[in-house]
Image (cartoon, rainbow, N blue to C red; front, top):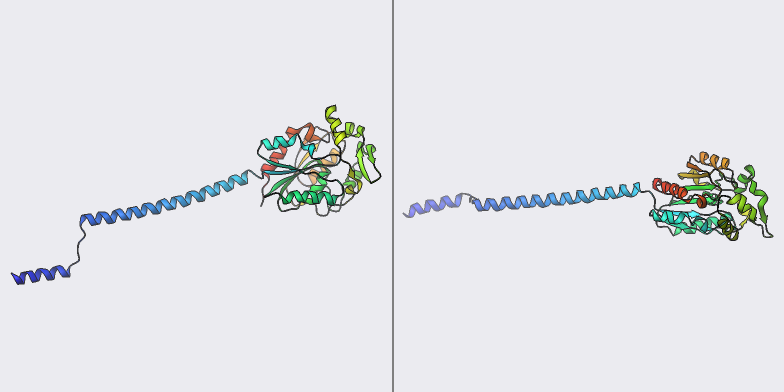
Length: 290
């Protein structure tokens, strides 16, 4: 019996142990668990990557959400009072600057200080002489687009005064200079030329609050017009007696701006605030940064 045991012992030592059914089941379970975790991790990565792309595309499709409004001569930021709540109700963040109207350099510097307070890209909107200011100051990298509202838009080496002289309007006779070289509009100029389509009460407010402009501010030529490098939009006031509607049309064509014409006086944002707000919102939606 002893030799038989020795043979059996030798045979057991020379062979590989076989897996029991229980061991094979545990190994397969661990393998499928590992595969499941890997697939779940991959799905999570793909989900968040896709969500990021969707959010980025959505953000881009919405355009810019910040707007800076720039008033013109014989006015202040309150000239945008009817447009501001309409834009804010649509989710846009609005800033209306207060220009000193002392010189083009001072006005551009005031506007650039507002630029510095913006966290991201924004749309720049200028009315009247404010169009000259955004033309001079609007080359900032954060400016996504320019909207001209019944505005001047001089070219390189051209001044606001150059455009006024080349395109005279009836208001010229109603300018009143003071001893310091600042100009105001007569009451008649406000009522008949500046805002003839506003109610009498609104005209009286404009007469009382008009801010005179330094004549020198109108005579400074533009250095590098921003509209040459920025997408532009233009609201043409068809009944404007301050800036020739033909000049506004020519400016819009020159800068290849998307434009609308509204049968309105010079203060189109006060007489037709809904149409102006709609157009500004459209420009904001279409604007994007490269």
